[in-house]
Image (cartoon, rainbow over all chains, first blue to last red):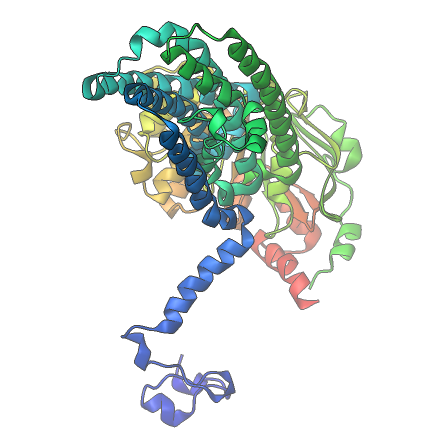
Length: 300
Length: 267
């Protein structure tokens, strides 16, 4: 197009001859001088992007305080426990390493379920999966099995390392701890299904839940310290969680007590409730997903 | 410029259109299909029946309701009203039985990029419970111009190769009905022509029914036996491309499309 074809409201001829940029509406001129340097305006633009994202996602906003609060609770209660110990260092170390191994069973299984679902979102593969003859049960079943496979490898590796590095041999306790490990897997399946449902419902804005949800359980499940360390109110919360029985049971076993079958039964009972809730939540979210077209989402 | 209300009244009822046709024995049947989001009807009382072996171009401007309709046909989306039958089976009641016999692809979805082509095909072959020999897989890849690429990571494919690989996935279970969303988008003319030829050949070999959306009007005119034109959630034209053009007094589908798409903006 020739220069004469520029409409009347285009830049003045003089400005065009000099190659200058056209003035912005309102007579302002684009600031070209700041383009090469450090621009606070550009910094503010990048910050603004984050503000928009945080404002849109309550989950993302909550994450700002979530980890510090959990850290404070977790390490605070652990400090209280350590301060109460009079000797018994070897037992405390056994409790800590045992707790760590069992915690990883719970965390990794829950994470495996949520992350494998997230991978389908990240790779825009969700539609391909849901237009295949896969049922919801098959879809969830595969992720649950993946979690078990992963955790079998992880638990064996951690137990081996604990033996090699800290002379802590958890293998003799294996059969006794198995009911608690199974219960932690059940809890993780339940929480993994709920997390997946939330990610399906709220999209990638909720993906942080895949990593964060398990840690919500950590301070209240008495992973590294007994329930007795918690304030009375939080003890009620702790005994309402199926995970707590696994960690309390582990400590009893490692301390040489017989397997507390009552804890095992309570954990199974609470896991049945958790599973019922998880199934109901997932079914409801699938209903909503088919109503709103969430399964057709090609982006988060 | 067209006025949608006028178009609807000037287009005569056609075989295959309207509620009566939805009761036919087509392999894809939509009866009074409606989808509302909030109070807004995105798909509004759509009925059609597609006979076996037809290639149907499903057209309409952006936002006309094409994706929503396909979502309902595939059981991804629940209709607010109406019914869907695929291969004589009700969706979503017989969802798994239907989905084992149909397939879908779109350039807007992709297969896991960190897996190779062969690994992805192995996964989807299991999902569809089909057993394909290595030679059959290679033949499918060859047909789509992907010969010798089985060990290539899917994420390393160009957009055109990715689109063609999506079609390979969609043909993996020898579907009786193939739903395609813009199957030649992002393909160069050679790639697009290859895909069209393959679709024609597969239809001829197997009598496969193909239901596809496209914004390439020339392609639609060349490939389709029939077009369904969706506008603001309603079907306003249904028939062979030539007949539709005569009814709308247009020379090309492209011109018809442009007139309809701009109708709203010029109002």
